[in-house]
Each structure stands twice: as structure tokens, then as C-alpha cells.
Image (cartoon, rainbow, N blue to C red; front, top):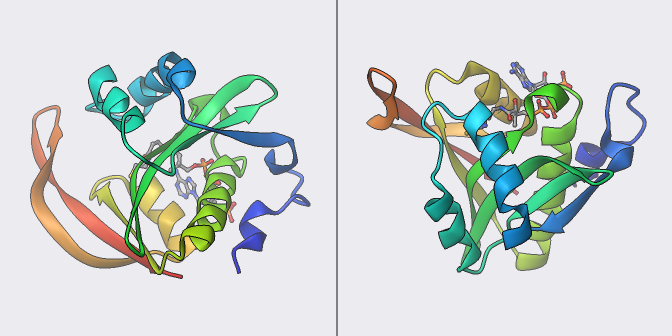
Length: 162
Ligand SMILES: CC(C)(COP(=O)(O)OP(=O)(O)OC[C@H]1O[C@@H](n2cnc3c(N)ncnc32)[C@H](O)[C@@H]1OP(=O)(O)O)[C@@H](O)C(=O)NCCC(=O)NCCS
């Protein structure tokens, strides 16, 4: 069903050269660097370490030996909760994000996941367009959910039904 997300025939896509590894402690520093350039209020090292101590579906994406993206997600019964996803700045718009969702959805299938949920900053139009293209739809909003540099903003809650 989600095979198209792993498409290898797109000339602008890096998909044919990408690999994934389950998230482990050796990836921590690279992930934190990517997070710092992606998130206006980046997750702390402790937050990532806590993920490592729990069962999760999280993985990093590699181009040759370089970590260029990560996906933090967990499964709860028949739901997948995407908590964080980022692609290193220089590698965006090359199909890496779409590729990671292809991997996540393949894993979700093994877990019998029926719905995937995520939260996105209301002002993050790029990511919202990205999720829309993947088939996510808005189900609700939570006001004042995220910190910004000078206040707070809403979270848009999205769902994709598999
Ligand atoms: C959102 C993000 C993960 C997308 O990854 P990516 O590798 O750049 O995305 P892809 O190249 O796979 O793009 C897939 C589709 O989404 C759309 N898209 C991706 N980024 C977009 C942007 N900034 N603006 C508009 N559309 C975008 C593309 O049009 C693309 O569709 P197309 O190839 O058919 O045109 C990446 O931009 C990122 O890391 N952003 C910073 C962190 C972030 O905001 N994470 C989400 C937190 S909820």
C-alpha cells in the first residue's frame, strides 16, 4: 500500500541510496545536531535518552555512513505515535522524509497499526504540506501547545488511517 513512498525511480530522490538502522546510543550526537538545526525549541539529550530506554519503532536514516535523518515513533496497541522526524538541512526536498515514512509504514504493518497520529506546529507549513501529501488529515488543534521563541502556538493533530 505504501510501496510508492519508497520509490527508487525519481531522479531527484536519494531513496535508492538510503538505509536505516534502529535508533541506538551511538546515533545520539548526530541526531541532536540535526534536531538543533530543525527545531526552534530542540529536544534535550535527556529526552532522546529516555526514548532509548523504551520500546520504540525509532530509526535513523543513513546515506552511506552519514546520518541524515531520524524518525522517533512508538506503537501503542494498534496506533503509531510519531513524536519527531527530521532531515538534515542539506538533504531536504530529496525524498528522504518520504522514504522514512515508507519505512515507518512498513514497520507499522508488521505491528498491525491501524492509525498513525502526530502533532505539528501550526506555523510549520512546510511540514504540514509534507504530511498532507502523505495522506494525513487534521483531526483537531490544541491551543498554546508549543513554546515559541516569544510565546506559544497551537499544535495541529493529524491522523492517517492505514
Ligand atoms: C518535514 C521534513 C521531514 C520533510 O522531509 P524532506 O526529506 O524534505 O521531504 P521530501 O523530500 O520527502 O518531500 C515529500 C513531499 O513533501 C513536500 N514537502 C516537503 N518539504 C516541504 C516544504 N518545506 N514545503 C512544502 N512542501 C514540502 C514536497 O513537496 C514533497 O512532495 P513532492 O516530492 O511530490 O513534491 C523536513 O523538511 C524537515 O526535517 N523539516 C524540519 C523538521 C520538521 O519540521 N519536522 C516535522 C516536525 S512535526
